[in-house]
Amino acid sequence: MGGISNFVSKKSREENIIGHFSKICEKATTKKEVRQIEMRLLKPKPIQPYRGKKTGLTAFQKKSLLLVFKTPKPIKELSKIIRINSYVNNNTYDTAFLLELINLINSGRIVWDDKKNKYYLNTKKGRRLRI
Amino acid sequence: MATSKIKEEIVKESRAFVKTHKGMKIDKDTSRAFSYDSPRVSSEYMDCSLPMTFDNLSYCSLGCVYCFAYIQKTNNPSFNTKLHSVNNRVLINTLRGKPPKGGRHGSLYRHFIKKRFVLHWGGLADPFCNFEKANNLSYPIIKVLAEEKYPTLFSFKGSAVFRPNFRKLFSKYAGNKSFAFQVSIIAPSDEMSREIEIGVPVTSKRIRAIKMLHDMGYWTILRLRPFIIGITDDGLDELLHRCKEAGIDAISTEFLALDFRSNEMLQKRYKWIGELIGVKDTLKYFKELSPAERGGYLRLNRLVKERFVKKIYKFCIENDVLFACSDPDFKELNMTSSCCGLPEKYKDNVEMLRYTRNQLTHHLKEARRVYHKDGRIMSFRFDKVYNPEQDTYLTSKFLANDHVVVSSKCASERQFGSYLEYARNVWNNLRVPGNPRNYFHGKIMPVKADENDNLIYVYKPSDYESRWIKEGIDLKK
Image (cartoon, rainbow over all chains, first blue to last red; front, side):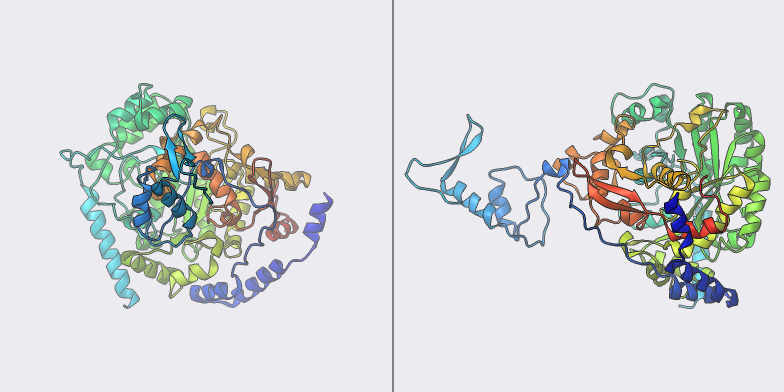
């Protein structure tokens, strides 16, 4: 109970504010004056920031991928490869990597294997791929 | 625009609304007449003991100027004023244990009704408003609830409760003790009540409703919300004593909150409220005194509310009345896990205790008790607060589509969405207003992440607690 005793004994900043507020309010005669005193004295304090470990993605987020493009054009390209459910306009994220990937697929350097159900690197013509 | 002109305009609009809707009947010929989707899961399920919330009509006929449902509905572009009702036949079959195989009622039956989970009726409308006289739609449902002894909490202020058929029904089934009643009162005086609640029975009449239901033997709750500073506090002592005399068992309170996104009509209402409470610019008053961390739904901070909560809390202790608080501030003071004011122990009918404890109101209350009884600081772990094995609705994909967050989700995201996952997102995202640290404005604070990457919060004793203890107020209740 030591914690509580210390907690109770200290006179806080908030206690001073409340005490001050009560004293001034005693003199107020109208609702308008009380509201003005409230606005002057009882403003909220910001919460202390959290400095601990940041949490990662949730199980739900891990199953999803959000892709954002500057223009609708890459969406058309991408829709040839994967199914797109919706898109949002007016965002500016860096999508260079994904566009590079689409170009590689279009140029035939990466090919879809229906049997293995995955993409593979097309090295038949002896071209090396760098991503 | 002069304020008196605004009063005239608001009163005129509200009176016209009430008059138009008084004898309004549902247009049975339209295909959507009986398509209102309810019961549903409350959007406040993270700290709500009664997540199954129900309204049998799409809106109510009363003209309360502060109505939060009006704020939500008029800000929704898809809302229209055509009155819709739930499908009574399907609902009654579900309550009788014959739900349809799938769909909303099938899901609700599986997750709630089969377990006889308490039904909360009156979240966004009123079961006893003026529509009842013309349509008689609430009565058949209430009759079935009574016959099935289904535990139900009614929240209302309409006068249809005084109609002979309801009096007879409630009197007949009073012995079951399967109903509890929350009666909403905002203004201590009848005069103020007429100013701000157009077409609603005045305060005295609502106190009579408390007395009538209490005398029948029901658990009655004074629903002192929204508590409007400048209106509700004007004569509060007298109101509390009048309600105690009428027989209240509990008081549930919550302070008025305003949506910063306001349309033209709302701004006029805000201006009128401002005139009544003594401010020129209501939104400015709320914005300056509301913590920014809570976002655009403006809720005043603890310091502003403290003196009123203290008065009500002290009254409850002195008069052996249960204190309940739905406001995010002072939520830890709840004397029960249900911030609507249902009891923790009820020998007359234990089914009335079938509300969930797997939510933040219960854990906050426990944390405050543990701290003041044992001096221990309690921690909050996501997996301990939310238990999908007990509250199976948390993992329902179907019901998750009720959640407001789905409006910004694509179809593939909705396939994986559930209330549990949405809660986990909010729990771990310190930037969103609904995050427990922001919502309770620092009452619980994150300290680290657990093995599942979820934040762990701890209870943070407030300054007011030390001040109240010094004054001899018991915080162990």
